[in-house]
Amino acid sequence: MYAKSLIFLLMAGLASCSDGEHTPSAPPAATAPAPSPEELAVKSALEAYEGYWRVSTAAEKEPRAKDWRPPLSEYVVDPLLTRQVAEIQNLASVPAHMVGEYRRSPRVTSKSLQAQDPRIKISDCLDRSSLHLVSDKPSEQGRVLDNPDQPRRYEFRAEVVRYAGLNDRWLVQVVEAALDTPC
Image (cartoon, rainbow, N blue to C red; front, side):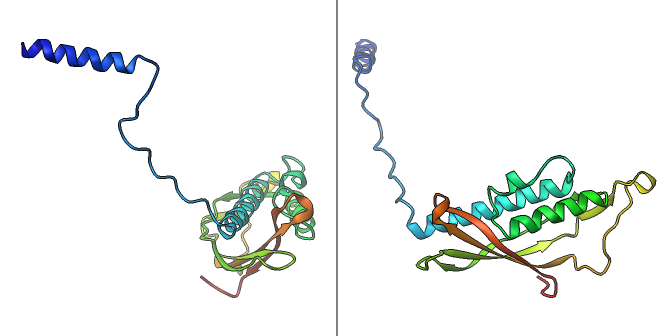
């Protein structure tokens, strides 16, 4: 008798599931609160900064691969854009390229979101210990060309600005390598 009532309960449960209605067995998970405008601004600024690094690093590794201005312009604005492109072209003319990886730890140091040109300042500890400039000249291919006088770890600062005229995009406007400030 017990087995029959168990089968009946199982069949009744299956029948209730097959009527097209779905009843959740657990309450829905609480949704996270929407991010504040300040949180969205910081997220967008950091994404632009990370994009700058992603494209710049790729360009340093393959400076002759293509015109780097269009991909950089997704994250960087003039006059920095023109300066970055010139540095990549200089690297290509040496000829040389970078090997290895940067180690970084960016953090937001200030936010000015109420101003006419909202900006976020980022401070980064740039560690170039495992990054090297390598020659591509046939007579010295693979030779390390690192400047022994350049520090390998230093503070790197950036300002990322929101441009209302460019669909409110956040773009890196200023970068500064503080070579005299170790981190």
